[in-house]
Length: 336
Image (cartoon, rainbow, N blue to C red):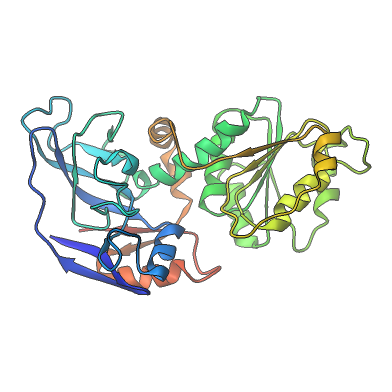
């Protein structure tokens, strides 16, 4: 079979390797779609992660169809479509330094268990949309971490895939009002398409004033605070944290979901006096298949997140596209 591996910094190769054999508890999945994550481009830039540096399998956002099952597997059938939990592999996280990657024609799921390592999906969901399951689990965990109430007013910073995924999750949970903030007009248009109640272009609008207009004034000992209950950072830039802290009312929550690559200074007196809650979010401890029913029920909305579907043969060009700021949103690799 053909599989993508990182062979050196900046170099990805599609190589021929043996197709895995199925043991008693395993299933073999023919990969039909696999999303590209920002982490993939990071791994590429450094030549992969140990212990597979120089020969690291790539890809972890996968959907496909089962083509073989082990003799001990009773709840998974050949022909079923499935999405995959890359964290459940016993030999390391799939596509994240583990022994296998999902940017390959086939992927062996060792010790396969429905609801833990794989989850069936119905045939009407396109494979490229099903491949969003993993990043949408990241988005759902970010939402779960701040535990929104139906009456809450929420602002999401960043209209990339995770920010859009959080927007869909918030609205599917019935949250009252969701604002999305970005600096790219096309991304804000997409946010409205997936259900945002309002958007703010922070490069051209007065963000704090606009939030007060949308969410009213919030209680605080400091002036000009917005009535926003929850701030979600899917952008991972210091300006977002600073804006949230300078705008948050008493008792507001600030969820950090975007990856910050540099330290951010915070005013602890502001946090104390307004009794703000800062909440971190990483991965998806329980959400990998919690989000699946929502994708199945509303796949047309989730499909709007995808900006490009690119053939596996063109993977190097796809990775370059993802690594170019502003060139794309969500790229999904598709297989014949």
